[in-house]
Length: 234
Length: 234
Image (tube, rainbow over the protein chains, first blue to last red):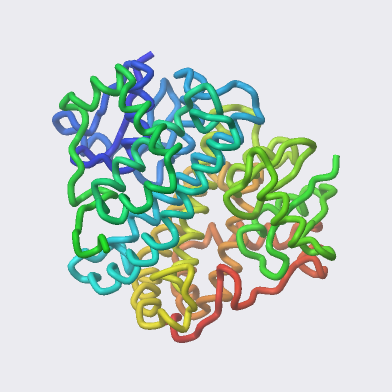
């Protein structure tokens, strides 16, 4: 079965959480919008579907079109052997992934606190204010929460001995935070050694390693979720 | 089976999306934190669990503790006969509910654009700027999306002829928007007749009607997600 992933072609963004799962599992997939005319195909599909996604990313799997990152991963998880099959454990993992979703939105808002439709340049003072409390309170709260979860599970992963798709997302959060807020993140990392250890373990997985070194991994940039604006990293 | 819902006792907030589903189904549940010492019990449970929720609301069902609204509703849906059983349809409904989640976060940010930890009074100019583009662009985009979904399904509900838990959430979105932004919402409503029709149908359901008239329905207020600050309703 070949999956088709639809996401903006020039950023990691929210699509990256899905890419990491597909890559780690060695799944066969087409990153459709990165091909010629791919973005047009994506927009066309979005409008034409009887079950239209609100926004990318979405995944096509046979006849199913599945939108929303956590929802895509919920579907893929057991199929890619990156989630348990037991209902209770799947719901718990989904709650964790939805907490990743919430965190990602708050990261996005560090550069767009006032409006998605405005440029960053038009909301710089607000962004600075937002980023301050984000680095002081919100980021430590979210990452500290995941640290606590790993501690309670016995580690080394969120669910315990077996890796899950949310561990891959945690890797991406650490990478993104390091890119966007190198100074702020350095301080935060002192208190989340278990989260950093998950990041390190994921980075060493052969398929992830190969992916990160490939052209399929788009570099972080200032159009994505995690943006390096030094004035926000205080 | 008696469910236990845990959520802040003085606001509708995110818990309301779960309450509406439980009420519509006539499910037996205890709104734990509204009882004596309930908030303490909630905080204690949050910290003590081996699978700790990041934040309320969460639902206890037997031994399961399930956090995150969309996740709770995903679990409850088929059990309360408010969701189809087919996997594809459940995932589609979940994508819709997660779009509700995204919208609710943007509603929340109309009064807290800069930081959750700050008072509204400390971010009024930013809130005004945010609310402007929210009412001009974001709210019409989200609600227009749901309008399109109902149109494509053939209506009268999001999934077509059968009601689902996300229709109940849509009712709550319309009610909340009317409370928070009476002027702005009046303008938006002209373009979303099918969404308003869902709201009307839900309001007429006997169990919802009884619930809304009961003391179990907390009134909208300025501590919740939807807040009536006239200066933001432009």
